[in-house]
Structures are given as C-alpha cells and as structure tokens.
Image 1 (cartoon, rainbow, N blue to C red):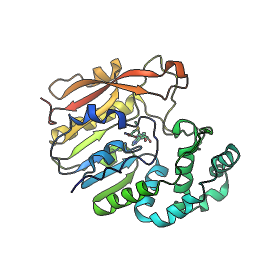
Image 2 (cartoon, protein in one colour):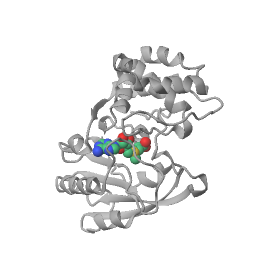
Image 3 (cartoon, protein in one colour):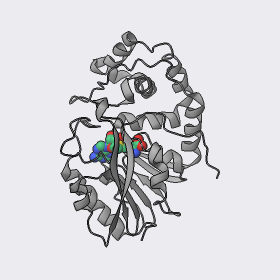
Length: 286
Ligand SMILES: C[S@@+](CC[C@H](N)C(=O)[O-])C[C@H]1O[C@@H](n2cnc3c(N)ncnc32)[C@H](O)[C@@H]1O
C-alpha cells in the first residue's frame, strides 16, 4: 500500500522524532512481521513508517484516548474541536486548562477530553504536554498567532490509517506492551531520556517519572527481545550511564546522532545535543 504523505503527528510532543527520521530510519529493518512502539508520544516514527500491523502504547492514558477517539469517533471529534477555533486567547485557555481540576471533568466524554487535549496542545507554550505531581496539565498559554486547532485533513488521514490497518492501542508500562512481541517483530523504543548531570530543565512526561532503574529494566527487556530474534532500536541521550548500560558489543552497536532540542526552559541553552541510537544485533546493522 502507498504511504499517505499527509500523515504526521497531530500533537506536538517533547522529544518528537520528526527531525531525526532520516538519520535513524537507515538502521531500521527492511522487513518485519509487526511493529511495536511502546513510547508512542506524538508518533512521528509510526506515522512515517505506516506499518500494517502495529502495537502502540504510552503510559499517558489521555494520549492513547486521543488516538482511540480519532479512530472511533472522528465526526463527533471534528464537531467538538471546531468549538475551540475561536478560543486562542489566554482567558479561555486558562479556563479550559482548569477543567481537569474540577469534579465535573470525570463526566466528560472521551471525545470532549480529546478535543480539549488537542486544543491545549496547539495553543500552549511550546506544545509541551507537562503534568504536575497531581497529574494535571500545567503548561502556560503560548500566544501563537494562528494555531491550527482543527486540522481536518490530517485527522481524516489518521482515522483512515488506523481503520485500514491492524493497529492495537495499549496504555501502561512499556514492558507489558512488548512482552509478547513475536519473532521477527521490530520494536522501536524512544523512552524518556536519561538526564545529563548538568540538566535541570524538563521534569518529565508522567507523574511517576523515568529513573535509571527504569532504563535498566528497558535494557533487560531488550536483551530478552534480541534473544527471541526481534529487531530492536533504542533512542536515548549520550550519557555515560547509557553508553555503559549498552556496552556489550556482541548485542548492541551505538550510533551518535545530532539533534536540535528546544525543551530547555532557558532559550540560550537550546541547541545541538548528542543523542544515541542503539541498534540491537539482529537489526540491519552488523
Ligand atoms: C521521548 S517521548 C516519545 C516521543 C515520540 N517518539 C515522538 O516522536 O513524539 C517518551 C514517552 O514515553 C512515555 N512514558 C513514560 N514512562 C513510560 C513507561 N514506563 N511506559 C511507557 N511509556 C512511558 C511518555 O508519556 C512519553 O510520551
């Protein structure tokens, strides 16, 4: 099937991989039985590859609800999103942002929650989905001129992709999402990055965070997947800890990629940082 070139992320997501696609894609296997992406975020890689069989997962339930709603309730969602078109001002933004702090929010439908999430994502500062320790969205108003709040052609393309193919949605920890991946599957892992010692900026995607113990859990899972003859590629930051963790050359080779990152709250410190791509030995790369 031909790729749909309209398809791309509907949500801006910290750590989005769009700008790195050409650097990382060359390490992906040419053939796979199924595609697994357990840290889907904005889904830049999924929407670029457009596999026919895929399992996608994220710990963030609101995010997965968004994709399921786009798949199952498209027309209702478009109508709901259109109600937000004239609300790109700070007064409305903070009113809408505050709704998840009220009891009534529990009664909102999945369509209403998804429309609110897309609206907030398009109008908040930097498109950063950030939660406080109570799990409430707390990014400030962005003040952008003409954000596209209801991108109907893109929503329709995504709906079609989800319905024409065999895409399974899961929400929870990455291990549960991948543990049954059969031989020949390709698993692309883009976890929250290990922090450089001097890094103080981005606090995290979820209220539970992602510790070095979690990075170790991820590495152990990759060992299991490789032993089961799955293809594994992992993105992360080029810290000493990560290079050490994946230093077994019989299983992994480590490539350096250059990324422009703009999630540093201090704009002077934004710029090129080095990331790594860790390629499991059953992948393309020798
Ligand atoms: C680096 S982002 C992924 C970015 C994505 N590749 C993109 O292009 O937008 C990491 C994602 O991992 C999710 N996450 C954090 N902890 C997790 C866990 N234990 N299991 C699964 N997902 C988790 C976050 O909610 C976040 O969406």
